[in-house]
Image (cartoon, rainbow, N blue to C red; front, top):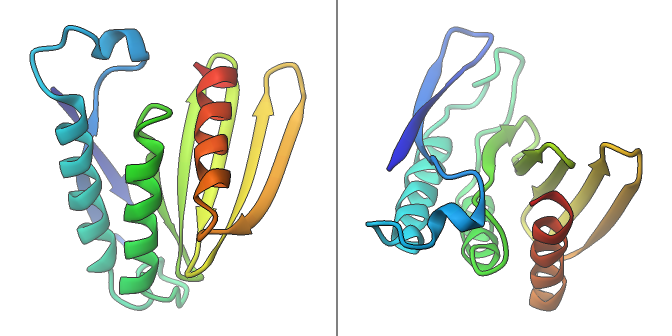
Length: 153
């Protein structure tokens, strides 16, 4: 099961992608579909859409999303799948992608570039957690996924 999520940009362009519907890990258990395949397909579809955005997609001269950024985001997204729920994925004007999670407990943002990431998590109680590092450090990515799941879900 998936929900179609439209994104409309200021310049009139819009794209739609499939976002998995379950909001809690417990909703995945016993589902009549394989959530791993669902998320992998949704991730690949979303990244293909983002890679196809032209230069200036935001109406203000944004860079297109490069093949390298998309590849890194796919690797990180598949790695996170083992630790937390699928994120919403949005483009940024400087050839980076942001993964975003939100729940009643707070929100988390993970920005993916060519070789590095930056991370911010804010809880409803006001606690902030930040991190930045190399995308080559898979332990850091695993730890961030576990932290997101533990704190937000």
